[in-house]
Amino acid sequence: MATQPACPLCAGGDCHPYHRDRRREYLQCDDCDLVFVPPQQRLDASAEKTIYDTHENDPMDAGYRRFLSRLFEPLNARLAPGSSGLDFGCGPGPALATMLREAGHQVRLYDLYYAPDESALQQRYDFVCATEVVEHLYRPGEEIERLMGLLKPGGLLGVMTKRVIDAEAFSRWHYKNDQTHVCFFSNHTFEYLARRYDCDLEFVAADAVILQRRG
Image (cartoon, rainbow, N blue to C red; front, top):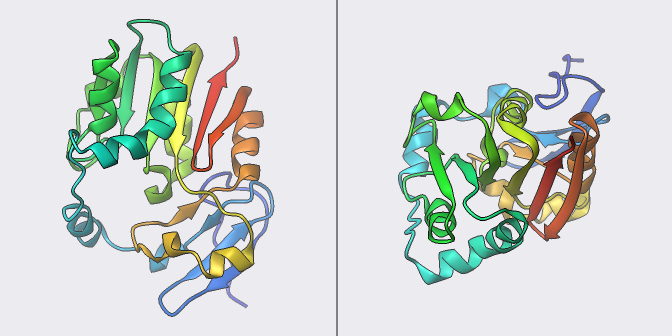
């Protein structure tokens, strides 16, 4: 039997088959509950960016703003006026950053392909947001460790991603069909992250969570 790859989030726990479709396999970690695509079945960077370039996320699009409001509204309600933050994985149309700036906050941008400003990762913030980002990460453990390190004490990490419910629902789930989606988080996965990083956790919408660093 082939050795299963290590979990890309916690690097611990046993990983076992969770689902298979006509294109890919999906494994699940017994420790942190992450469901993920094995590394050898992921797209390369060029193919991945080709798909990203087809996305049309206009910051002024009313429908897209309504979608983002599921994180924006609870996050903004918890922020002090004039807070500083980072929109991580902002994409070519940083709509959430626009909304937060309109609310009076200072927001820097970082995106591997569209805003690769490494200086944005060299300071600390009152908040970091990652909307429709974590499901794309090939090394989510390293990236979330970095994002947590960017937060000031009491800082907020806001995440939007659709969550795994169970294997039966996963088998019918359209979200897994996007080949750039390689990591799938459940409630238990976020609870694991809250324990690991000593955070308070709130599930503020069906696809949005806020983690607040204690201290």
